[in-house]
Length: 118
Image 1 (cartoon, rainbow, N blue to C red):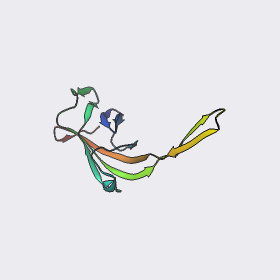
Image 2 (image 1 turned 90 degrees about the vertical axis):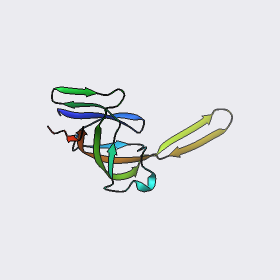
Image 3 (image 1 turned 135 degrees about the horizontal axis):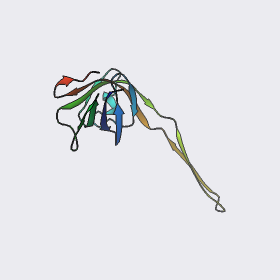
Image 4 (image 1 turned 45 degrees about the vertical axis):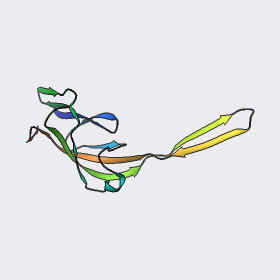
């Protein structure tokens, strides 16, 4: 709880801690054929790191900060249904899609080549 990092990936910012898993929509650096189980990933877009009492803030990102993790599995989200109806015109259109997501676990957080532990 006292050590965490805020990263930017997939168009959103996440607060990540070592040992926890997270779901993200897009891993910008990986293509869909590279999203296999136990693929190791490095995230360099680290906005902030907190360790106990110290807080390091980047402008916009921290230099030398890396979040290491691995992909647990890619999966499809629940189906989103879009139903469009124009009344009195007998016009109905039903569309839907399932977004692709990836679940990954954070193994460690590094700052200037040193692993940050609790």
